[in-house]
Image (cartoon, rainbow, N blue to C red; front, side):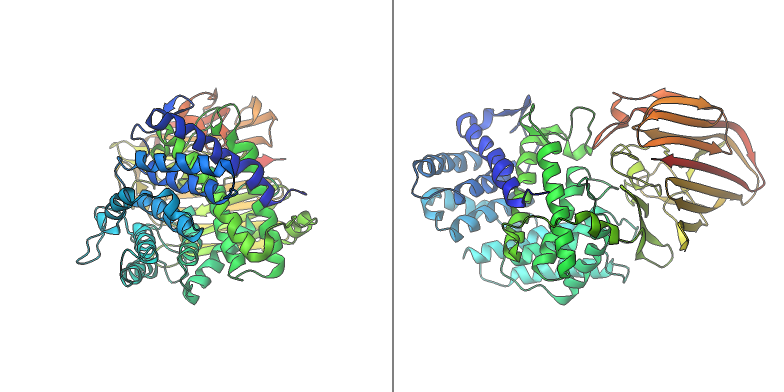
Length: 587
């Protein structure tokens, strides 16, 4: 791997932004990207993203060139054009970041007119979404304090406000983290429901980067949290450049979250020298994947939505322009951090494979421990890096498959965003109409190693009663789950213990795969193509196979699933303990 991060930025990312700069300069609000009108309201952060992204183009140009003069003139017109749109939260932050960059590089006065500046000072204010009197957010979740802090600090750096409010808003953010970190250094995205996901692991890196960008010191408490995040992201390192793999907003953002965390950790010397080499090489793999996989040359755009791919609903294709710009900006920001960490022209370490081989084959991180346990197991098996999240998605997410306590791996074991398929987990419909699933209420998580075997087990004294926005407890069934990981094989065995006799109208379970050429022998399904080549279920009959390629509900961030295998049992009386077990084999 001789390519550097700098080459990817210069050869792919900056030209990608420059293409949109030129396109918007001509087309303005009429611009379409892959058939989507970009300023139709689908992306409420578009104005700030446009300004910020295009500022990178200007500051990387020769200031004495004719090209710079042309793009400066176009930039002025684009600024005027964006001012007619509403500014919200992250759009405000992006816009202010642009202005600070222009100021730092000495071109603010050249491209920002007095009339534009007057409008910007009024629109780009944290008070638009935070009440000044008590610093409470206006109809927004607590994580928006990070945005509010950034906006307040940038206004201070631009000389628009006196210093003080940014520190108070930063304190609000840190209080939320402290209140819902479970004491183990990881922030719950919900007020105690147990949503530990991509944003949990990204948050310390994101805050540290904001502090760096706004010339503030990083507290030791944050560095400790950042180190915890690094412990996860380093264990995920792989040759394919795949990043974080479960929960919401994964795919491209699962990849770039690793970039943000590991780069700022290297800059702050939170990593050892060997870890920096591993982290940089892994980051270059992710950046290369962005250039080769996420950017679709036919679309001239990042592709999160076509050719079998699917994003979370709030990242629908109406945001296509903004996603092109914000993802590109993330890569440039990350490179700038690596550059300051001494890696500007660095070629990744030659023995990347050797560094990967040093990583533990099994790793468990505990997010929280109390009434319920939360954690993540990472299993490394040859070329495979498998995640087993044991969390709750909490409000509106607990019932979505990407939060289920099931193994996942990008390109091998995937699930569709915001769908509720009972993949690898039984869905039990009781005769009274209630639906139960063994989700959200894990207790007594235990891990153990025995040679090349790795065990993860836990209890659930309550089932999850499905159908409401928040998870609800149901005590009619208890379960004991045991996962066994051995090279090339995953076994899940779940023992159910009824509190009393329960009449069930249906038990249903699905298995989905990217693999192809299926063959069935009773409850065993084998596949002729694909890494995953065999799956067998015990404890249920009535197995059927269905091709699902092309069905929207079975597309994933990285591409379409090929087949769904399902099992169904009807008119079951649960009176004695019973077990459902499956065995999955992969190459």
